[in-house]
Amino acid sequence: MKKYLMAPGPSQIPEQVLLEMAKPIIHHRTKEFEAVLEKVKKQLQFVFQTKNDVLLHASVGSGAMESSVVNFFSKGDKVIVVRSGKFGERWSEQAKIYGLEVINLDVEWGNSVDINDVKKLLEKEKNVKGIFTQICETSTGVHHDVKALGELIKKHPQTLMLVDGITAIGVSNIKTDDWGLDVVISGSQKAFMLPPGLSMMSVSTKALKFAEQSTLPKYYFNVLKELEMLAKNQTHFTPAISLIQGLSVSLDMIFEEGLENVFDRHEKLAQATREGVKALGLKLFAQNPSNSITAVYAPQGIDGEKIVEHMFKKYGFTIIGGQDHVKGKIFRLGHMGYCSIFDVVSMLKALEFTLKDLGYKKEN
Image 1 (tube, rainbow, N blue to C red):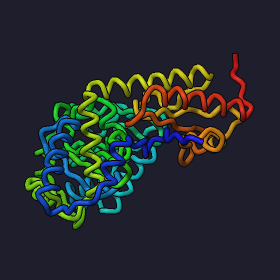
Image 2: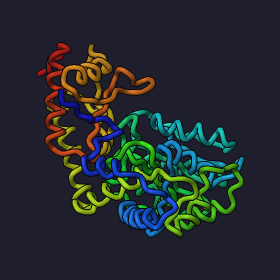
Image 3: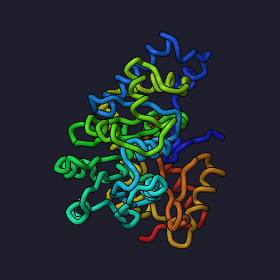
């Protein structure tokens, strides 16, 4: 049976990227590797839409999340964390572990953050050093208006805007510099069409000043040392060499397609998926859905986990269910990265067959 990976990450990997990573490994302290890294860092600046450096860590996205905590703050610093799903909660937990004073802005799962709520918190709380939010909350498929948040934070020079773009960079048109996003992170296994294990982080000039004052403990995740090495087209520690070589090829693919065309393709795939599930009589979970992931309510009387299990066993499609209190109530369909309209049409047809197999009948 042919297998289709249509999860919210990892996403499908192009054959040419796999072939590049299968080549004999090179040493990272060589001119050969430096040439690859120099090319990649310039291309990442273009994709992140920033003039600032984008550093690489050999870690999954959660490592970059932790790095964004330890590098820009000191114990006792006050931060606001938007918690609208599993990954907002994760950032809150990381900040608390390192001794930050965390103010949680809780948003009902499936909803986007209200900018006015953030504004009121900033007016109420003094000396807020940072605001953490997702662009796309992967656990719910919600898209947050980080453009509006960035514009708000521009009026607060003592506050950083830190953004999790793991399932958004390379999917949606995120203007890092223009919107005033100080720290933006992403991961290899989403729109960058790679296996997990590589994370990216863009750092603004404003954020660098915070990093110079940070007193939290850091060793492996040390932004200042990484940026110092990146200026030499090197990394502080041994990098994920094969992943970076693969990234070079995936970035070439993005450049060949054209960044605006990449955004347009993802928007069309997302819209097709949303219209397809609605045509089946299903309801979307996210009020403001992202173009990366579509979260869908399971039909009444059918366990969402059964849909995930059956769709894989009988039709070869890997999708993912809900997490925590929405487990069994929703399922999530991925349509980012190396994905075409034919993948989406096939996924929707497999979903239709699955629902029929499980006894679902669309209400008139």
